[in-house]
Image 1 (cartoon, rainbow, N blue to C red):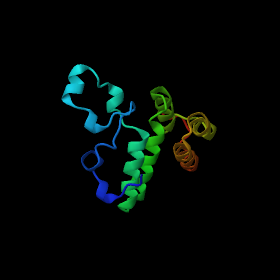
Image 2: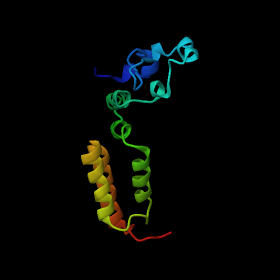
Image 3: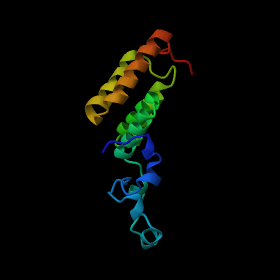
Image 4: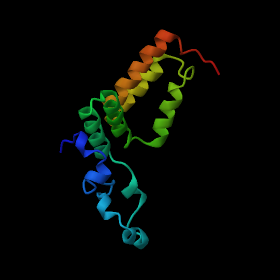
Length: 139
């Protein structure tokens, strides 16, 4: 389904379409369900689909950079936290000792986790770090 500006905020305009990882929609998350133990953290976590819908709304609102951020975030949902933190650490100025380290991280995201948008973002960072001399260990 394609979303547009008038769909914002999705939680209010289309709560039946906003679903957690187990497929429960916001309308299914009642106090009774919570009290009975039928709601888990998986029901509350954001999904790639919800982030893609937010990207469509942002793009329809003329906010293409925000849309790109939502699209990259959608790719990150299924990547293990420890992988995200390792790459985050590499992105801190002076932590990666070479452009290759960032390119390897981009390849991992693209090939292992099907995250081409994040991979391109890391490759762009690698080029910028090389230009600015940020591969020298500073701390």
